Image (cartoon, rainbow, N blue to C red):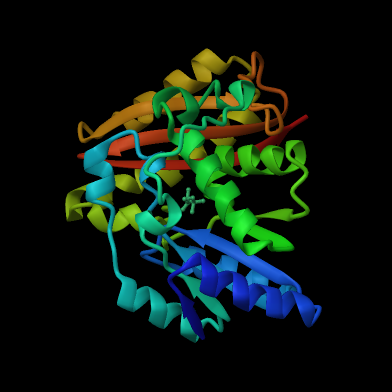
Length: 283
Ligand code: PAF
């Protein structure tokens, strides 16, 4: 497995592969890899000749500096996991390598897709994500890029950015992997205390309740979200950032619960913010 720290090393290796006619799959990550990331790698290996993983905690996408400083790191463990998973190249730049002139004076924004969900409660987050992902796409020139569907809004924003900017890349969404109790795998789960981890199982149970309400004929988003919020708030440790039902393509709020919808939530357990979503089709 090749490990590159600079853009030059990376470009040299990639142009060699391109000359040999190899296709490239790319899984961008912020490290602290878990099985969810490994499934991105597996999908890439199944689709492309070469698989690249980036490990970079991107400062420009954190609206809360404390969250950035506390983001879990395990470079040694991550490199070992990448090697075991058969990754061909890992890119581990510093922030000086990615942003040699400091934070760039460039703002990318998709107002419609960013209007709801994390776009509303995490100002500047997706601007930072689009900035770093487009830089990485230019550097790596991948044929395929893999994103976890747990970050559904991120997936849609990247898909749309690639379409608008004509990146010759196929963006592939990979289903969320879950723990035994249904909690979505996330690098942030490690920050939960034992009690918070126990309470986190309310999230997957809330999605089961949501499914039952929809099957039972609930059509009113306000009533639906209130019942779900009450369920989550049965633990005083849970604080709700948002519970929203949106159209899977436009991410606009559903005014009535019919057709396809994505129910998305963000909650705080102590200081840890977790997000999750589930897609439902309602006839
Ligand atoms: O989903 C993530 O881990 C990050 O937002 C990403 C796509 C690696 C960009 O920093």
